[in-house]
Image (spheres, one colour):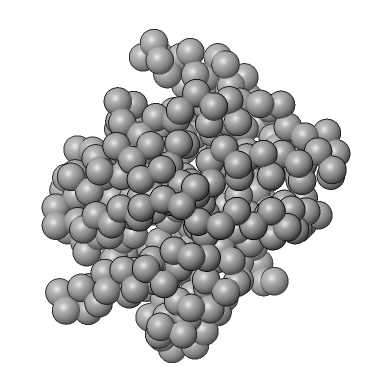
Length: 296
């Protein structure tokens, strides 16, 4: 897969479709590599007429790592956030948003449709806030606004975020299955073998829990984006599962309420993942939202 220098770091990326089609940048979530955007889903978006770009965020996959920042104290970061104190962080969600926009520039792309999932939705929102001229449309999936009164995880899901990282490949695969059982979509088939294969592929490609910890602190340190979201003027789609225990649905509703003209799609039975059964609905909605940008 190709690699590009962007925003002072290097980002690993991959593309699907015709470079002459409108660009669509896919931004993945906490600790997740770009391969979490399933190739078949990327293919569906490319078949719909988009030049699809997925990439590894900083500190994950094959992109630049911030080893010099060390492993953060998650408990201290959470305590600081809950008490209104500054949260020391190696970088911010804004920095991560600048990464993606810089990647587009390196690829010679002036404007793109931005689609982000979970933390990727937060980053996508920050892209629209910080770089409105580069964002054709915005899709925020299973994400939230940064307001700590909405979208907070259920206790069992929260335990997953702060649990010790797996010590071996086998433990990582089992953790992937357990995690999917906790935060996955109860209204869609549980495909354990595919989950095991996906967890193994992610481990083999790059196992780097320190990066996930630093990304989590970047989320914890982020400010409420609601006031800035209220000023956006971009076609926006907000997607959320009604069974999401990690970023609970109030986060999606608050996002849609904050952004003028945003459309909200609640998917029954969906949790905090992107099961194949929801892809037709998701792709149709993303395509329709992108068309609003063309018509604007």
